[in-house]
Image (cartoon, rainbow, N blue to C red; front, top):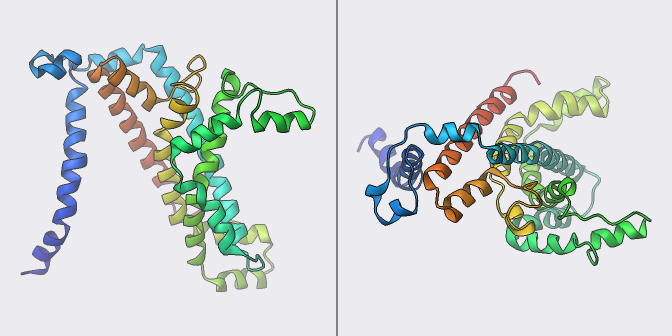
Length: 292
């Protein structure tokens, strides 16, 4: 058996799984977006009609779709930035040579990652309670007025962002810690000998050394945060109040499984895929440059 044949033999199982669970569903979803597939077509596929780009044209004038897109963008920009920044700062602190009990801190910070999203969302929903929630009790101790966290359109999305950042930053923290260990200590020694300050060492040594890690973290965080679903579904009863927490995935779920507009929901999924593809390509281009 030649080396090329052996290589194909070893990767064949992964390729089969990729084709069955990704390529075929994605192709079917794209085809579905070009039809008016609804509950009648579920019973009999012959009832589905080819409508071309009609679903995408409808999206352009759908105010609820644009509201979901803006909400998702707000969540990704604010929540994703906070998550990456907090994970990087925490990783730098845990990587410091003088810190004791690093293993304990890593375990504590990573623990929320292994919890299910639904369980965490239920806990935070109680923490955000207006009358008996811990967050408002803390505000009262500071002499501040209580906040209707999940019932006020102004505060509902920040409340979800706070929960999501707490839930997810530990994963990126571990990735950054692994990236920090790959940076040679000799580079820091040379920088200190040249009189570089702590900020200059971070700017010209740490950040360039973390470029591949940063690319991975930013990409996975963007993809994960664009798929916001369970948090508003559990915490705000499906995107309330006044659709302030309605996300693209939640909107797609409602159209597909509540109203049975499967073709229209598939069009939303295609748009989301295109957005993710474009943003991923852009982040890869920006973070893969030679200069920082």
